[in-house]
Image (cartoon, rainbow, N blue to C red; front, top):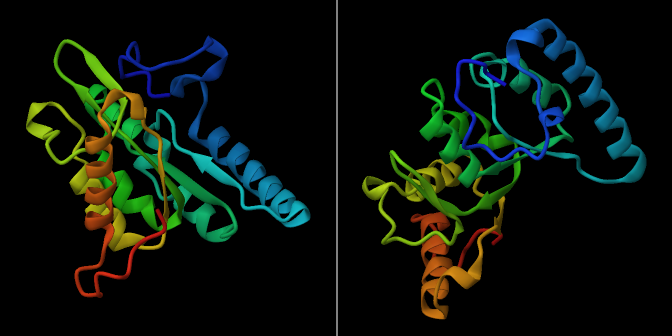
Length: 199
């Protein structure tokens, strides 16, 4: 992890969950990543499954270099999971991170999107795992879900959407509005309304 960033708002269960960037060189990252991708690709082939890696607390080796993208091209059976909540939170706490840029770069390699929102203001993080709703505006501290899904629709219109929210935080009517809104955002405006993404 990038040691320039204050990760106190990030949820870790144990200090063994991460390694600081300054003690884990880019060369070592590249070497171990290559080993991992080769092993995962072989196991995926052997056991007939698609390995899916979920982004979590990205450092500059991932978002400032082309190395990971090259690995994803070299091992095309390995896919990604992009989590809108995690990407948004990192952008709020990490001054070097741009979630939209990461989504733009990696959406084409995504197998699934973990879709949820949260609210982040100067003094607190709240409503974690909140259903995405059109009335939850970015200017009020909410994740810019419409921007994210617009990029995703353009880069990977057939990606799977997993609603990773807590339904008990909203009413049934709000939950239905969440699903309708996401379907609308992911629908290709040039196709008939009967077409939709895998949601």
